[in-house]
Amino acid sequence: MRLALFQPDIPQNVGASLRLCACLHVDLEIIEPCAFPLTDRALKRTAMDYAGRAAVIRRRSWAEFLAAPERGEGRLVLFTTKAAEPYAGFSFQPGDTLLMGQESAGAPDFVHEAAQARLIVPIAPETRSLNIVTAAAMGLGEALRQTQGFPVRAVEG
Image (cartoon, rainbow, N blue to C red):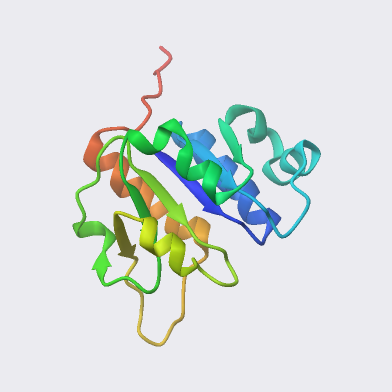
């Protein structure tokens, strides 16, 4: 299971995604270009002390992302407000990559076309969208629940 961010716009969301992925032991793929300088220093600043605990893979382009060996391990599952299938009814598999579009523009058509599934997080009709990290956390929570992939914390005693 992994989380991928398509050309993120907001550094704080990358930081929150790093923290989420560190806590859940999920790899994070960042598909560039980003709308801000993506430096190791910037990642450490936005992710606080979680930056070193997350497995981060930087993909320099969409083509590099698609060509990565990880794409053969599962499906590309896009979370989008343009989908009709609710995420909670979807059957996740352990090798799936949960993909989030840009905060400001969502995912372009070529990303939609590459996805094997497109899912929505149902929200109140008078609202527009959730923050991508909130949607990612909901999706990862359901995916890890279904695949029994939550990390196990040792109990000290």
